[in-house]
Amino acid sequence: MPEAQKSSDIGMKRGRAIANLPADRQLDLIAEGLPILMKSAGDLIDAANAITDHPRASKILEGHGLEEAAKILILMDIVRCPPKVRPSRIGPMMAWFYEHLPRLLYIEAQDWRPMDLNDLRTYVDQQRRSHYLEGHIGEYILPNSTISDRDTLLYADIIAYEEGDPIWSSPSYDNPVSPLFPRYPSPWQTCQGLQAVGAFTRAGLDIVSSTWAAIDFSGTESFREAADLTYRTLVGLEAAKLITEQATDEQAKHLMHRWQLPMYRLDFRRIDVPIEELREQRDANFWAEAGY
Image (cartoon, rainbow, N blue to C red; front, side):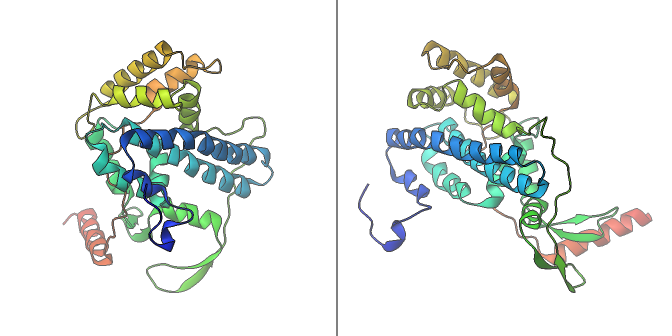
């Protein structure tokens, strides 16, 4: 790559520069970063499970660890993106790498079970709206719950509702955490499984890339196609002797059934919803409930 041309080219958050690299070098850099991200995420999740007597702090650490795991899943979707499509998608995807909402939605999406990619797109589009209606007939206007849940866990702050009066919000998290049953959320299990089967090695990334290049997940592709490609990936990794001794049958089953459809064709940018639109929808809900 050329040397830095301006001061902002130097320092953290330079992952978007990966888009300017040749295809092979992109995979080189991803392979170098995946173990680093795995350790970062694992350290945080292990720490979360170690402080069960402080549930809020535990949940904060878990959330931070899962956002690191989301970075892994975004990078793996770059690898799963067909090489002919990748140049147009890698820039936006590396933007997701640095933004809270896309990372959080990536994590949430791992537990969704859409019929196909179009169905998954509908779910994502709904969850990236800036505000939504809540209540029996949508009488309350609330901010995006994915971001709001994160922020209210992290921060004490002054908030306002539709009435406009500011009030204090005190962060809290009261759900008990059992020291006997540590939390290992499904997205983290996906990352652990991919590492165990050798998908994070440089040779493994080549196998993932070449296998998933067979289908461009853009519309009606479903879990059936994804499961077939996952199986073919596992076969390729085994043939290349990349599957580690730590890999288990349960991890292979998890990847077959829980690794979400590739999301490189989706949009994770926040949708700003005007308050007028929300009020109109609320009025429509009221009259529909009233039988008009």
